[in-house]
Image 1: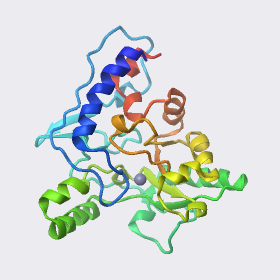
Image 2: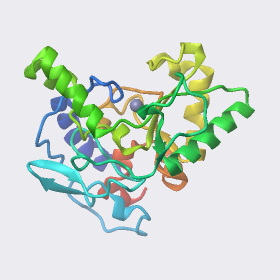
Image 3: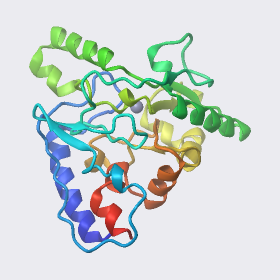
Image 4: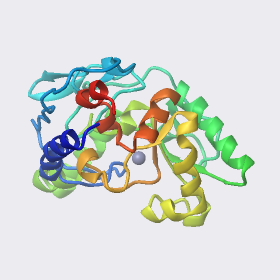
Length: 268
Ligand SMILES: [Zn+2]
């Protein structure tokens, strides 16, 4: 894409991100929720080259206004983009959740053990490939339901009050973990914690280099905070399928930028 387009888009998302607050995407207490943050697409420019295979999944083509919110229209797509400005439909839950056969950082099976079937199978392959290179990864937190996020939110309101909750807790419907396509991953070298130092470990570097080969992206990259609205999270991987993962990884863009209509049309 052109620098001009990138700058234009960047400034739009930056103001939205700053208004919404850039916070952790994974915590139960997460982002504040500034309603009605309509992130406008940059005006289209030059005519397109070849149409992108992801054109139908552009962030502009997959959202509708509902009760004053931007609600995604493709919650079941592996290419869905859900964030503080793009709600999943109220009560949305994937229908194909399973528990991937990988090592977890905790015992027993919980809601957070789950991923959608396709993502779970890809995670198994990713972890197996890591293990072949003596890299031991642990799954820490996957699916989080609308109901659970809602309960966490309500509990925060009860203990902190409405105003404080709005600042620290993610509204139900805005977490990528609700799609069943995101897993937080860590390693014993950082005591299986979800912290930025994971990115500097052997395991974190391996994950950043190889996740895309199995259909995952490290979604919240360093330097992309203004675009994604989230701080750098080297532990948070998101399944998007091999084709899109490879394309996003090669582009150096965030998922949000890559799936922007102007970039899909413009190519580079
Ligand atoms: Zn996460």
